[in-house]
Length: 305
Image (cartoon, rainbow, N blue to C red):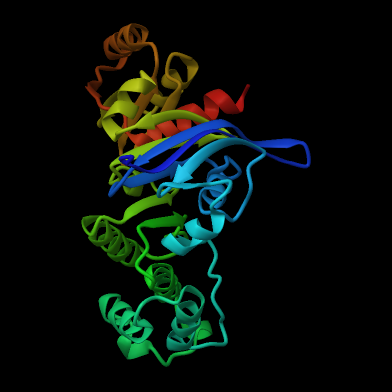
């Protein structure tokens, strides 16, 4: 028995001759919350669709919940839940009618009880007769999750599930995700939100078909070999112009009135800041880079190649 809910190797996929996945390999431990990061078009959705049996790869092998992704796609679909990026349920149906339709497809044991339990857990009971088209983004998101977990899957694939919803709905949604993980449900989630990615057990950064980095947040930060300094106010107006002139500072970002400078050449950055300190008398300190710094760095580095 494997310890991995997902274990795929050397996945390839082309669309009209254009590479979407390039020898992508990924292993996701059972019961973990695994995050996918990467710009639009990087291959996150394609990977998810291959894993859950909705798309056939042009190369590569692997298993999902112990089932072969090439031979056992029907069996895989029975045991996973998939929530696409866009709301894909029937707008003209009520919440309850959509869940009844989902139950008729997956045929869970005691479907009425499954629907009742799901409505209660996601606090949809009071709205169960409301037409789906009238729901806000946050409630549609909750309905989509209800449909994805109704049959009690062991693996949940979430494709940018919180895009376009407010911060309160995002936080509540992540509470549901971790509740599911505590019930031994494995979750693979793609996101553009760095605070969400940092909550995951592990993350992988995809860039146009390749995984450039993967591991825990701390391991990703170490792998990046980025260094960051915070420059605190007060400082003269001309400081930012002086920073921009020095290419050793690969990123310059404002956080309120504090300026963060990021780069890969620690000693040169330190010397440059010492020089600026003699000129302007600035207050600065080394800080840890975060996932957003790494996201921007990788995108700039590999996007220019």
